Length: 170
Length: 299
Image (cartoon, rainbow over all chains, first blue to last red; front, side, top):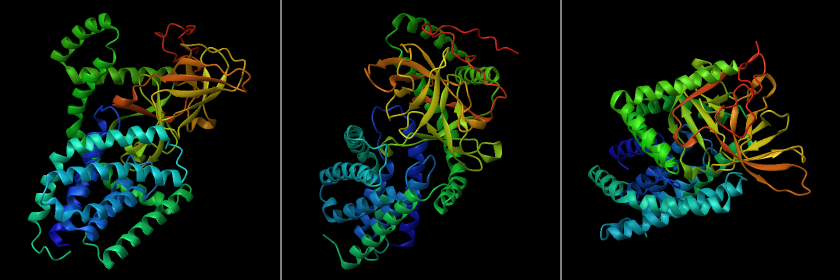
């Protein structure tokens, strides 16, 4: 990771997280809305690869865990986005060939992030997580994330590539 | 696959760290190290969210206006009349007037109940995919807001404060599954416990299995010792469905909250409980089914 990329990632993730709580979550959408931070993490990880992707995901998750009005355990989103960043980093080569692969990845990773988050909650006895809610939340998040992905991911990827002064330095 | 040994080690370390954090946080009580971390985070991000909300609020007001029309579509006649009225208001002083009305109702509630409140505006809302239902408001320690205080708006109970930073506070909404409040039926002495469940309706459990409860009954807060976390007499909602539990040890009912939690804007944090219990003084007069109490609070 170059210094430029670290700065860019920080800026993008913080912006996404703040816009998420102040704008996206206030929209009266039926079901769970799109997850901007998830999309930004996926886009960055596709460009920077699995190692840096996992780190970016971890840091972004910690930010989401801390950003008010948080009520979940510290580290829960960090765990989820760390896995997402790692997995998204694996698909980087294919992504240059096809936008469909990216969309498929977004769908899969969105579902995985929702299920992982609920799974960790079950493991630690979160009374808020129930089967029926998990299903509806997962389905609606996947849908919204797919809808928003074409507007977020190409832009973030292009920005991240532009800051790649030294692509070998990961 | 561009996996190396190093990648796997990094991933393992990060996952282990996250897991340790979660475990520490799940086990640590109030005032733990992570609590302090969260508090300092809110002093950093609170101002950022306030600034963002200042830009965003006019837009969300507009969207709220559209959806509140949608939700009342079942009463077309009333809607049409209301629509004309609304259109006229929109032309003159749209947002200021609505906000003034909201503040007006909030002040009416606080003066009727003798609550000392701090008004605050919602600046951030939790994501639904996190399952928790919380909001951030732009009032904090500096304004006298502390953990475990009652939050209400002009319609009724909204929730309670679960964390307070210097200029912002986090509120647990009453629809959150971790939310519970001791409650009382208006115009009777039946008490019970009301819980959120992640949906729009709340679950009410009355301790007396013979309790007389019917649709339209108004539920109020019972009140906690010293008024924290809950002050007495705040209207919560209306019973919409009584669940038959023959032979049960308690009575179960579903309650629809008065406050519209999906489009919250102005709320009031009760920083000083009333000196005397307002009893039924705050029961909204428009709900037909409840026996209307004399709304003049005795001096």
